[in-house]
Amino acid sequence: MKLKRQRGVAIITALLLTTLAITIVTSLFWQQQVQVRSMENQRLQLQTRWILRGALDLSRLILNQDLMDSPNITQQNGVWATPLEETRLDDYVERERLQGENFDATLSGRMTDAQSRYNLGNLAANKVVSKEQVEVFQRLLSNVRLDPGLAQGVADLVAQSQTLAGAQQSSTEPMELVRAEDLLAVSGFTPTAIDQLRDYVIVLPSSSVAINVNTAPAEVVAALVPGLSLSDAAAMVNTRKTVYYRQKADFTGTAQMSGKTILTPWDVRSDYFLAYSRVKLDRATLETQSLLVRTRNSPTRVEWIREY
Image (cartoon, rainbow, N blue to C red; front, side):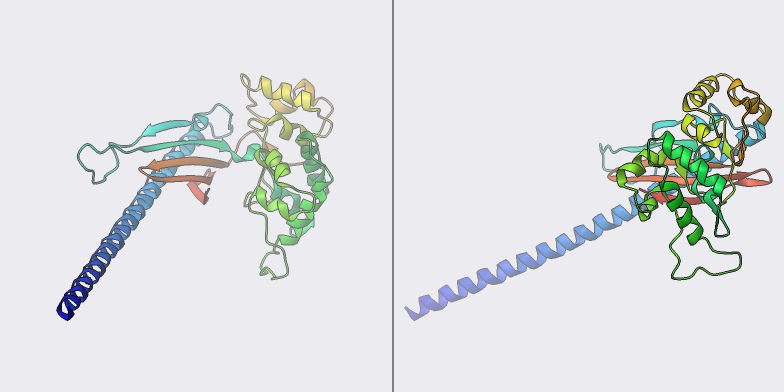
């Protein structure tokens, strides 16, 4: 009887040891699989960023060519505005594949004129609020059916967050505006209001960037010109589809501009552009927004890239 008990204990011990060994081996295999998957994910993310880099290089090349072809004009139907539809990259991306394996590798993108929007940085310079710019922003808020009283709060925030030349920003100063969502720091702004305003405003590195009347929507054009109604601005934008403004005189010479003056910077060409890219590689997806800056004397450069 005692021998049987010892045999039973031995069998149970053997089973427990076997189970423990299997658990350890399974855990090791699982950890190895996690590490392999992690390395694969890192490789996919790295490859998507290289694809993005290539897409931005192409965008810079297009903008440089557009500048050479039309140095004094940026029009809404330029080559730079042609979107890149979703393009398959399977045959151009190096990746180890299993036999018969199929995966998605695509790239899509588009560019928009950043100077078709109102630059919130124009509201103040060297910590001093611009009265004329506040009035422009007030008109824009009214055109998109928001409270124009919000303009002063935004201007004050822009002025307070600016750093004087040669000085360092104090820890007590508010952070400068970077994107539309930062307007939530201004009392009265809601996520819904920001969604209404998002496509009409931007924050650019310079505080004196001109609005391009060749690409700006009617809401921004009407805000630019005191006394110009939204309906007249819409008519000008509609005409612009076939006849764009080759020089400033073409814009000021229109019937809608008769007797009106503009006190804020404006132009018929642009130097700032937004590039939107979407890269999909297997299970990795990268969507970005980039600000491109071109000048007459140097190649187009990437100012910043934001992932979203």
